[in-house]
Image 1 (cartoon, rainbow, N blue to C red):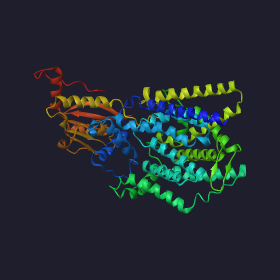
Image 2: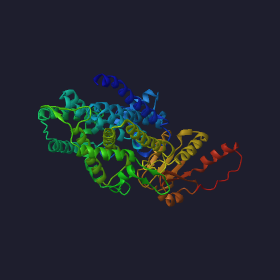
Image 3: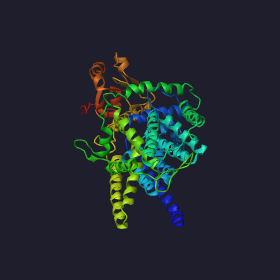
Image 4: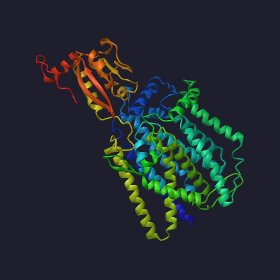
Length: 549
């Protein structure tokens, strides 16, 4: 039996790596295939400061942590970009896609406790989960946060198995990177503490095993781990020393985020919002979306982890586990996933990408669920049927992931799409580019954008090649203030703008985000030059076109 397991090990690792490479190929395929989301555009602008000036300044009100900016640095250099203006959507999403695939081999740190079948199941589900695939193609913090969270948990578990200070240090580094990624890392820390106590208590009650972790959890070791985590987080948040106020600003950030957690009109969603996405999302006029194979297996896995008696062996200071999995670990994962799901669901402020934090735990539990079914079904033909049904479920997830990320990546019926940039923005940019081509000063066109708020993103990304762009979160008070080669405004300012720009051409509206439109006014001499160039004659009489609807 030992020789069989030894011979199987290379095949097991090869399968994990094959799944990882498949996940990577799936994520990077045509990764720039949709317009830049407003949040992505904001992060790209923050990255510009880091790349061009070598500095990063933490903002206590917006943007979260800088790990994604530092991840983008090698990507743009590898792709041969020489300036921020040369960068493309795919440049920023590529490192996130790589991180999204790199989550899978992290499972190898768990596999002796999870078991090979459970580990392979989790790896495959991570590779094809629609949520993980979709947000691995987004320049936002959630996928790196999930990666660092799994690394933190896995290294922490290895520390409890080995008592090695190196595993403790590695876990602390991952914890620091979690902090440097997003403020919601604190929710995972709280849930982990609660879950560790609950798992130990349940194991003591059900199995009669009381763990003695005093030598592992000494104040000296915990302070050392905390110091490492703080130093790592502080290094990133301070821009590696360029902004020493950054760590203090980070602590201040919890005040605005606490108030925001109560939910705004835009981001306030009901308790079941996340679970509906995973179980059954059907918006009127659209298709049905779900990740039911994961949810069903996760429920089964959680039930087994909490109810079944486990084989737990302990030494005075460490935990050891057989290849079938360790009950203490499974119970911890179950409590961690349940508590994290509850706390994210209770918080009124919800955005769909936050689902990754607890979906990660669900996928691990799904591995246990399938492993339990295969153990319960002894006959090989019956096991083959179980595997076949599971592969059908994985195929459904893969097809849904493809639909989410390629064929419906801007469809508002897609539950993973949230305040997405409308494809109509490309028409607006194309029009401005055509105007610039015929204007003598080309990209030196003066462009003004007036809005009733300062959230006019992602316009700054799409107008980044025009240095003379101004953004004004208020209505203009005079014609001189309003007029430019191209003036854009939100519809609320239409009356004031029309009264001021009586000689300009109102060139219609363009949808920027769902339900968010901007009107365009083009100065008549600019439009005339464009039309004359289009007609191939400077003498042809100009007739204004009808307004776009």
